[in-house]
Image 1: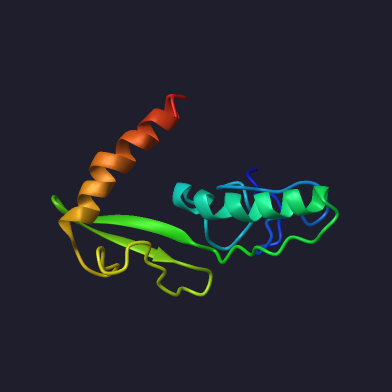
Image 2: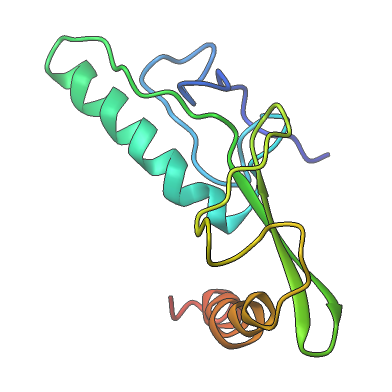
Length: 125
């Protein structure tokens, strides 16, 4: 049986073990189980860990950011980025329109993301 760890969806702190945090697709959150989510999750966890060590409360909150590059045809893709509330949260406003089929989104998926994922699977990234 597969289960995700129980974390607060904003702080990513374990609900029963306060000195444990989750990052990535192990988290029991409604969204944000992609590699792209980790970039935003790490900053939140880092803030809370450093604050905990210093005897303070962390202030960063994870909003559920996730990214879903969707290939629509050869040479075209949509880079859809959104949060827990399904608000679009584009990383490249004015450059990559989240709801348009663009060659740059396809290029990013095929040239940058695909080799990175393959390297991760082989333990090289």
